[in-house]
Length: 232
Ligand SMILES: O=C1O[C@H](COP(=O)(O)O)[C@@H](O)[C@H](O)[C@H]1O
Image (cartoon, rainbow, N blue to C red; front, top):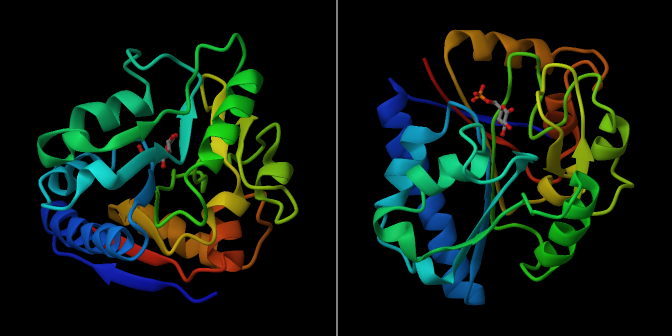
């Protein structure tokens, strides 16, 4: 599936451009279906975009925000993706949004995954918006090279929902939405910044196994063409 590249002069311009696009998609979803859903990534890249999006004037009370993936850590842990979203996106006008957390105090990551998968059904599908990031190892969501359940996570046969993942270099056990849940979002964005990530993207666009660079599963097989947002 072909991807479209949107280039910006810097991260600030990208944050505003992406916030404009995403807020438009969320507003359209609310106008057509009365509600909207968005799954966002964690990591270091999305902070400025989250702040820009939080200021947009849309009907946030009808929007549910969830995470593409999460570490199995409580929301007050500095490594929590939920904490990043709470501090940067659930602010300003977006304070009125609903949040569906992936972490649950459920005794195990497996148990948390079952609970979240059931809760996520209530959002309906597909997601209106999915914002993916990408690590320099070619991972996206928690689809890590060498991940304990990578084949299952990126298989088109694996149902929608959240599964667990462990991988060297991932730190804590992870929770991640499956490929099936993410690939058909009405708006599917890959947000990357810096020349290093652009080089990784070029490598991912070349031939090679998806298991070496799991972002390939999205670039090659997503039902929705990927919009790539990049700034130096
Ligand atoms: O582990 C993760 O990393 C990726 C990329 O993060 P970045 O710091 O390089 O922007 C992120 O997309 C994913 O959600 C996160 O859990």
